[in-house]
Structure formats: structure tokens, C-alpha cells
Image 1 (cartoon, rainbow, N blue to C red):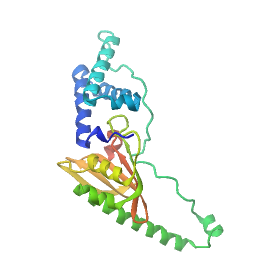
Image 2 (image 1 turned 30 degrees about the vertical axis):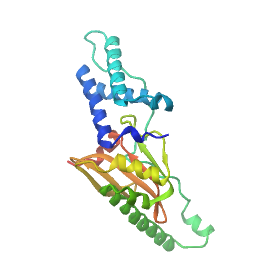
Image 3 (image 1 turned 60 degrees about the vertical axis):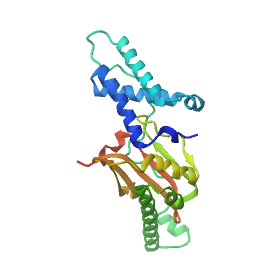
Length: 250
């Protein structure tokens, strides 16, 4: 199960901004407002798949829950007390700005001696060739994202490709991986492409070629890809605003 129906990136950002405005109107504190939005999305993800599927208008549900949390905090806060009542803890998220890479084969001097006898110069050349191949495939992927070409995206994806997105509980991104080239192509097209005013730029992500999407200089998504041969096998999308700050441009 995925939340492809969660909408485009622009719609998700607008949804989060809508919830923040509700909380700010009630409390006037950005820190408390952000906590309220996080708790709202935590309650959304606490629902089962069937419960979420049964909510016809998720934005209306989220609005109602955010308003309820505001009322709960107001009722629990003594008069004249400072705003900032602690909220239930959310799941811890990685502190890095990009998704971690999958474990790979062990390499090093010991491997050179015990393996097939290939020396360090050969290994360095093989590593550079791998990075070059990754760069070519990632740039094909980026070009398809930039034009919103679903067919081109499908062509660069492996049959069993997977996409994982991380909203950090601050955006209603997919919480389960999406599998299969067709589904991944549709998901990526719906989420990342065709957004007016969005700039798609190739960038180094975790030491390999990836891409960054920005609107008005503000990063809205960072995308890393795993590559095998001439195909993308996995797409890692970071949407969590907290992890995107270092990617902003002044």
C-alpha cells in the first residue's frame, strides 16, 4: 500500500503550510505550531491502512485533528503560562541530510589479497568506472524528472525498482515503499515533476550523482538513486523540511 493519492509535492507543502497557519493563529509560536503539525501527522500515520483509505478528504481530517490538538493544549495550559506544552514524542529520524546507502560488498587491501588478486590501481579504475556509469544513469533519470516524461522514467527504471520517500512526519508522504517500474514511474511523476517554478538540478547526493528540486531557492526534495548496470533500482526521496535546510540557496 502506498499513498500515491497524497498528491503532488506542491499540494503536500501547501497542506503542511495550511496546518501551520491554523496552529500559528491559535498560539502565535512557530515552535509550538511545528510541534502541533508533527503530532497531527503522527496521528495520521498511527491509523491503519484501511482507516486511512476510508478518509475521503485527508486534508479535512488533518485540519480537524490539528484544531483538536490546539484545543487540547489550550485546555491543558494554565492561564498566563508560557506556550510550549510537550507533545507525544515522534519516531526518531536519521540526522543526515540524505538517505543512507544500502550496505555494499566489503573492499580494501585484505580483499585485494584474498580475492582475485586485483591490485589497488585496478580497484580504483573499477570504482571510477562505476561512478561514471552511475552518473550517466542518474542524469537520464534527472532529465526525465525535469521534463515530466513518465515513459522516459519507466525506461530508465529496473523492472523491480522501488521508491522510498521520507517526509519525517512533517509531510504526508508515502510511508511504505512503492514497487515495480510502472508504479515507481507514476509515483515519481506525480510527486516530483510538472511543478511550476520548480528547478531540477543535478547534485552530489551521498557522494554520487542525484538531484535537488528547489522552488524560489528553497529545496523541496533531494533525490538519491541506486544503480545497477544501465538501470535505476531504487529511488530515495527526502522531503523532510528539517533535512533540506542545508540544500537551500540564498
